[in-house]
Image (tube, rainbow, N blue to C red; front, side, top):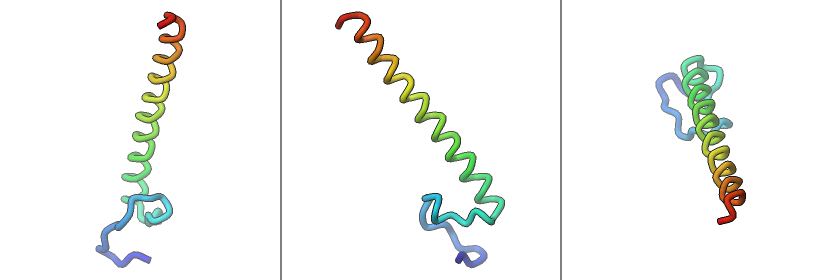
Length: 57
């Protein structure tokens, strides 16, 4: 349990005090943004592989 004023020691979801609204908003937005970036990178990699196979490289 966190004491008022104590900092978060780990950014893992199971270690965050989700009951605190400021932590909920900050880390919620952070994880959504990281997910969107990761999804965009995955789509780009798969499209590059598909295009390379089409071009017979």
